[in-house]
Amino acid sequence: MIDKAIGIRPCTFVYLLLMMLTLVTWGVGVLGFDGLTMALMVLVLALLKGQLIGDYYMGLKRVSGGWRWVIIAWLMLIGSLISMAFYLAAG
Image (cartoon, rainbow, N blue to C red; front, side, top):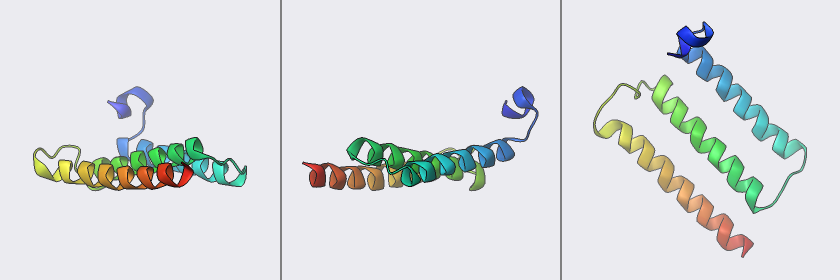
């Protein structure tokens, strides 16, 4: 679908998207944004990047069953634990 819409292969599009998200994360750090909201935004971007890597570069987008859910569950577990740590430290 992506390759027909914009004329590039899906993995190339995902690579460019990953680079853009990395630049956004870097920009947040360089510009000195802080606070719980920014920390959680950066965490969400990291989880999104992890899901994109799992889907496109590990080849799990077309896999049915448990393997795809393992990656999703792992990302959600780590994201929840880090979010809880940030929330408890801020409160």
